[in-house]
Amino acid sequence: MNRTFSETKLEALLSGLDTAKTPRVYARRPVHTLTIAADRFDVHASRRMGEAALRSIDSFAPDFVSFARAMWLTGADTLPRYDDLAQELEFELIENPENVKSKNYAAWFAWTIYQRVIGKLHHEPVEELLIDLIDPENAAATADHLAQGVLDGTAPPFTGVRLPSIEPRNARLLDLFLTTLIDRTGGKLPANFSVTLTKAAQDIATLDAFLSEFETAHALEPGSVKITLAVHSPRVIVDDDGRIVLSKLADAGGGRCISAHFDGDNFLSELNVPAAHRHARHEACNFARQIMHLVLSPLGIGLSDSIMPSTALSNGTDVQTVHRAWREHFNGVTHSLIGGFYQGWDADPVLLPARYAAVYSFFMEALSAQKERFREFTGQAAASGEIVDASSAQTTLNFFYSALDCGALTENEISEATELSNEELRCGSFAEIMKRRQYKAAAS
Image 1: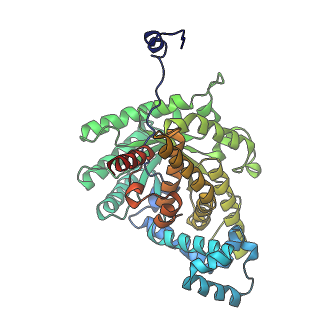
Image 2: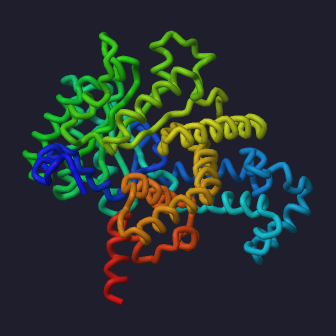
Image 3: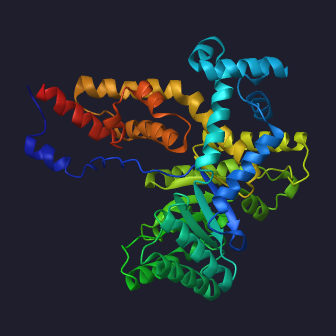
């Protein structure tokens, strides 16, 4: 059989091929961030936020039917309108949820989301808590409270602080906070701790240098403190010459940048969009998020969003107003999720029910299609002994891990959908799962 190229020539020509990197093993990321001022933060802050959210459910959606209608969950319009019928249906769901699921999926869906949201608000209402440092006194007190939470295990799984910039005054605040925190915890930082500069993304390199010096001074692992890039202005995305600079800003963090947050309200303000027309679905916001996704996702940087509800809430708010705010928030969160932004920031705990209802609905409704996609990858790998598209396979697997971590899906539901064993589920890597299966098949 004739060929033009010899093996030696072919190897020389192909020597520059960029071999595909092994996809990153899954690592948990929060689906939700709550921001709080330092003067309102103490060791019980997360629990208080959860209690406030639960009180809002008790007051404005005391049963799964009213909750489903408030959010406009899929199938909510088919649920019974009379209390006695709704209560009878709930008794059936408690007694035999699988039986109701087969006959009345909309009822099972609404009841399941309702129960899981309440459960989440009881045991982990805040996945990430970001504290705004204000002055030296608050910075030291905040560090004391956070240290106590770290030591007794009550701190959220993700924590961090926000500063407008790393200018001298704020650098002193950050130094005071971190030093106090280290002193109180016996020389360790909380796991998954980050710093966000809300108004000065261009100073990321300076922040990286500051954190490197701090880690060296306290014998901490390099890169222990992470950075969140705040996309608050068009100039964080493009420079004066129209060049996209997002990746350069992320690189300036020296490998610390693990997430990027889109601040739509400030972004639209700089584009001279009046307050009445600033909302999450504005075309400028959609465009900015798409650029963030295209540039940052391939770098392994998580994306987060902030929704801008126009409905104001207060202690004396009526049912209609709360439901309108919930529905608006639910729709905004869903819009972000569909766009690939799996994390979002909130400032009001009353919106937590809508946040988690949207997240759980999103994962549950996407389960069927994701299951089929995942089984395609495992089937191809089993048949050929090779993973055709390792990156897409890992991304598909990550969907299930994210759903499990946030409480949207149970381990049994994921095992049933993916046909993965409990041991395989804990692995975190699609490539490793397939490799173990091949070893077992060869051994048998």
